[in-house]
Image (tube, rainbow, N blue to C red):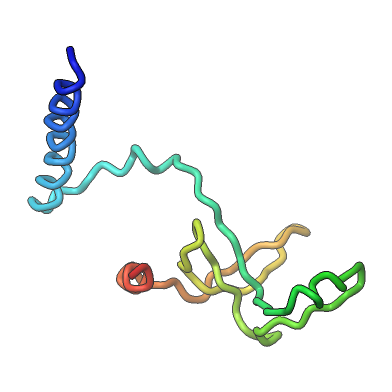
Length: 115
């Protein structure tokens, strides 16, 4: 097999794999999502943000207080892999912190924010 044969083989195999997914989506049948259900994602919570010059950042030490842009009673932002998916509030369950979701961002809104 020479170098010119390999790309043709790969190119002809790749569209066939995606053709089945496109056909399932077009026909309205449910896709089997079991293959991705065990994929780990990173869930993170954002209490607030602050912008400060590097000069002030270098002056921070133990006991320093950084004022955040968010008020004390406002909800947290909940991110999955860096994408905002919900807002919530901190709860304590059995001496551990948790988050109670108060508002979930709709799938259409998540897609709109990606653009």
